[in-house]
Amino acid sequence: ATDRLPGPPGGAAEYPWMARLIYRQSMKNNGETGLCGGSVINKRYVLTAAHCCTTVYDGGLSYVKLGEFDIHHTKDCRRGKCSPPPLEIGIEEIVMHHKYDSNSLKNDICLLRLSEDIEFSDYVKPIC
Image (cartoon, rainbow, N blue to C red; front, side):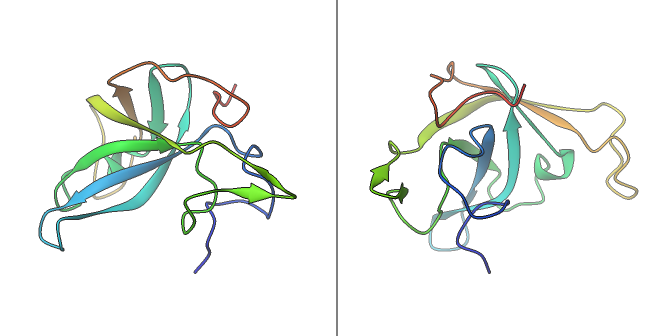
């Protein structure tokens, strides 16, 4: 298992569009887990796969984490420079493609409308 989100070794600002989707685990120690990722596309939306937005995951989506690079450390530091703590933003609305098919995974796309605007920085910004 890797200690970092997808991508080659690099600094915390190398993938500023990455979002980690956090799910409630109501039956497992009342904890939370991050099983899927997404991409920040603007100040209010994250794009992800529809299979990450279904109720298959126990407890459902809780919030997204932005600006996180190394998921096993509270601080992401490289060459003496540390990034700010990750942003945690709630999910206001889940919009799955209306023709999503969980068997074939056709139209496997979903938008997450966040509960507040993202404050962009060197560590958190849209993919394009």
